[in-house]
Length: 113
Image (cartoon, rainbow, N blue to C red):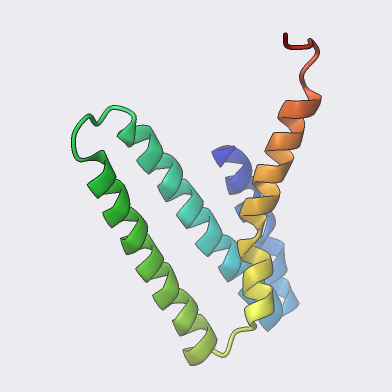
């Protein structure tokens, strides 16, 4: 699933040629991909942690949330980016998850008891 999100990131590069809205879309894809990959890496590390996993997860989540909020604030307020195009780019993570889930459901060939 992480590899598919990286493919979404590469697929957003041609949008840069569309002007400011394309740049806003690509910035949303970059923010979504960075957050998704950071979460995927954190979950893989937490599997092996016995003590303090909740604290690590909370600090990581709120730290990433604060950095993402600052980036979106800078893009919208300072740069004047379109919120709609940023959210469309950010939603590629949800599209990726939905496509992965559909492929898992459609890929099952046997019935479970």
